[in-house]
Length: 194
Image 1 (spheres, rainbow, N blue to C red):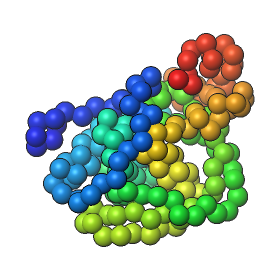
Image 2 (image 1 turned 30 degrees about the horizontal axis):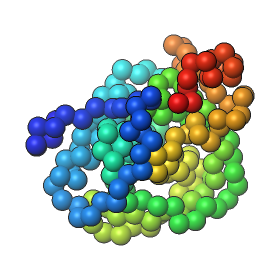
Image 3 (image 1 turned 90 degrees about the horizontal axis):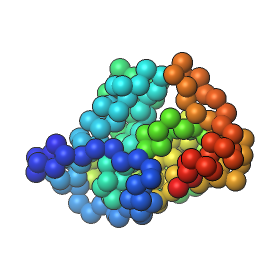
Image 4 (image 1 turned 90 degrees about the vertical axis):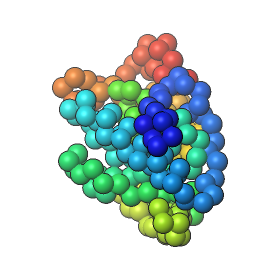
């Protein structure tokens, strides 16, 4: 709950709000800072019930706030690290490197993973929490995270990149392993592609 008393929670498919494009943030004021704190709380609450998953990032639209705000965990592998970097109005200015396929999940698409092709290097331009411009070059997994979250700000989900790839969908099993899904039976009939 923020200072105004508004309580935020994670939205998931099939919520159509996830498909909305987010609007640009003007001034970084106390309301924006409250939204960011709420994003952090929602992410940490989500992962507290998940033994095999780490919440590495979140876009504001995922708590039903259509603003171009992204938070990314400082240490992507450490579930005990509860600090985040904030990127306001992030955009990718350049895609570089190779296109690689790797697994992606999403807090807003429960228990489904996909093998998604992404560039392994991107250049980012954004504003930080103090309103200062920042430029960042991300490589490897961090580049994937930026692409995934900036997609959210444009109303796009990782499943959109693989919707025509029958062997790209997986389900997270209780033991933490990923099991390939049957495209026709599990993906199409269960409306995973919404």
